[in-house]
Image (tube, rainbow, N blue to C red; front, side, top):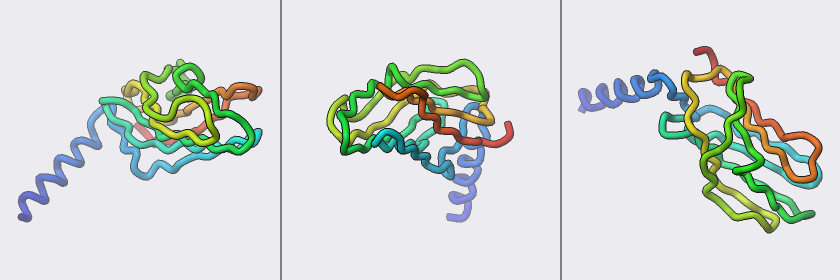
Length: 135
């Protein structure tokens, strides 16, 4: 049993140390409130298969018509914005929406990432930023 536990710990440490793998555990959710709409973003998985962010919209004042495949980008270390590859969630409309926004994995692992969402009718993009630490 002890040997099995040691093997699992070794595999976990190798997975976390592999290039392009960043643990989403410990990265806090970020929330903005503007124009009567709350947007909350939580990093879920930052792995070679893709980077997933859980996104929640909440309002009581307007229809949520955001098309995140067109209005969201991921910026790593201030570089070139990358478009998402998938949205698995609620379709446009209504007052409450949630889902997972997926991006291609970023390699090598960046120090800082920003998820930018340009909402319809808002003058500036909403920016959600995380420090991932040293490479």
